[in-house]
Length: 158
Length: 130
Image (tube, rainbow over all chains, first blue to last red; front, side, top):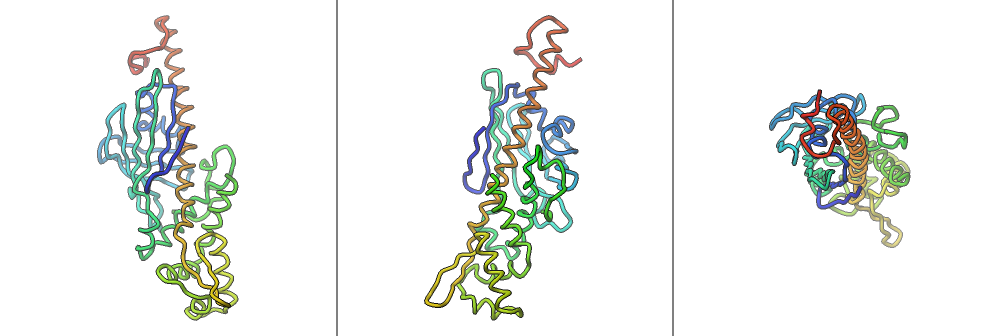
């Protein structure tokens, strides 16, 4: 597992001892998705289709699928749902690329279009925007088995 | 990791107070002395000093001295913790995805062996579904 940052993006990479076909199912099948992310998922895996994942019973990530090329590539938009959120669902983009690697899969995930400090500076509500996001970030502060599985101890929402 | 979390918590707490966000907006494009900042608010000078201290400790505010005066300016790079947070979020998610997908692969291999006595390498895994 390795991770790196380039520009306004976060990139993470890993190798999985399973075929790209199987891995791809975990990006589009709700029952499989909740095995690795969230408590409930509402997915409509086609371009323009819904992507909605209840991360911990309170924080809901939502956007829509932009591109699906099984078993090679999946792109979906991403943001946090909340009545007072200034970080609109679908405001950033997640791209997952799968590549056969022997009898396994090399997976690369890039989370792009993240708000940059420069954008926030120019935005009238920029600081509020970051306050929202960071309050959500603080929710990851519990070093337990899966800090994202429960909303307890979380700060404000994004 | 614990340090990162503490740092992120500090930033979140610093930004949670509306007046501190106003202070950051004030010194976003230009430097200001503590006195100038205080004059913009209807609160006591010590209260403003305390806000400045919280922002500075969170890494969101830069401070330099000019004689007896302290001059402040926003430090947007103090928000780098946001990206660190997302990096960690996805790294943890992918570790779980790896475990879940590998378990699924094992399950299908085993099922394939039981059904036709062959190993589970190659072929379309969908076809092995009962």
